[in-house]
Structure formats: C-alpha cells, structure tokens
Image (cartoon, rainbow, N blue to C red):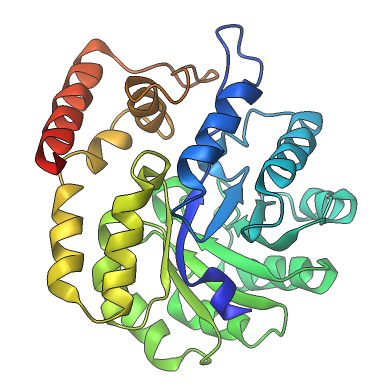
Length: 295
C-alpha cells in the first residue's frame, strides 16, 4: 500500500464555468495535463474547493475522475471535517470504486485537544472500508496534530500515513524517526518536499503540480533516488511562483495559473475571489520566466 503513495500526488482543482457550475470539460483537460506525470490523484481535497461543493457534486466529480483515469493511477478521496458524526456519515455513503484511501483533514475551528484529535481519527479509521491518510495543516485548521498523536495514530492498522503541511521539521523528524516503516510521511507543502524526503518522506501531495506535474515528478523522483542536485535544481524553478499560489487563498492562485496555461477557467466560489490584477500580473511574469528557462 505504501508504494501507491510514493511520489507525486496532485491535489486536483475543480474547474468552474463563469456561472460557477462544475466545468467537466476543464476537469478533463486538467486530468489529461497531469496524468502522464503524477503518481496518484487526490480528489475533493481543499484544493478541489470541497468546502463549497455539494454532496452531489462531490460524488459526480469523483465518478468523472474515475472514468477519465480508467484505472491508470490510484485515487485518494477527501473526506474530513469538524463534525465527527458527519464525517462518519460521509464515509458510510461514499463511492469507493477505484479509491485506494481517503485523505481526512484534522478537525478545524473547534480546536480539539490532542486526545480529541486521536479519538476523531480512530473513529473514522474504525469505520472506513479503505485506509485513512491524516492531513495536518495547522495554518488552516487552527490546531496541530503533534508528533506524539501522529505516532499513536500510526499504530492503527487502517491509518497508513500523514500529509503534513506544518513545515515544523523538529516535529517531522520525530515522526520520521519513530514511525512504522510502512507509514507514509507525505509533504503537504510543495516547497518543503525535498527536505522532507531527505529525512524519510515518501513524496508530496501538491497544489502546484496541477500546473507543473513534470517538474514535480522530476524533483520528487530525483530526491527519492538520492539525486539531490537535480532535485534542488527542480525545486528552485518553483521557488518564486509557489508562494503566489497561496497568497490570496487556495486554489485562487493555481486556478489563475491554469487559466494562463489554457487548461481551465480561473473561477472560484465565494467566499474566495478570483485573483487580483496584481497577482495575475506576477503569476504571468513567473510563468513566462519558467517557460523561457525550459526552452
């Protein structure tokens, strides 16, 4: 199972039309753009605007990705929230055809204790028919899955890894040192991927890989093969553009970048707003520099 999540997972954006309905033609283009390079798809994570898609949309988006993927890559499906009973209901009714695992964000806003986080994930893992990947993103949730809690949860037979976006390397080193061998330590921060792999990480679930799947594949494969000069070279290509992806909220930046690359439209659902003119200009400048450097 660990090998399924070694490498690059792309956190797929959900393209919208101007009327904010799901743009399945745009989603097909995005799948075709990323599929030749990435190792697995993550569907309806935060980047997919899962906070503002309906249950019916989530189900249809997942089915569409499954159809387009045709069994080529593993699929991870996002099920998470700050109401444990609601999450259990979502787990019960989800479609697991071709789904290898779920990605479940740590409960946000409630700011649970470490014991509360432990009990939440234990309940989800006990109920879920496929493995669970924890998702620690303190900058969004307002709480942290600390190393001790992560390692406790790693003992559960149905919890197989963590996507960690904390960039707290003291914490990450502790997890890397004491985790079970088959527990996946996955970067949730694009620019922290190479250093995380150097201490025992197995890859990344990336936002920027929506636009540059080839660069991320090259970077991660190089790091996993201990070719750190090449990994560093690829990482440096992404250094200036990656922060722009998050400056006005995710996925505002990546959708604008994909629009400029003629993959899909830039529309997002409120309370997010499309990129400001300043952000559009700077994304265009960085994209031009990247494309010029690769010619």
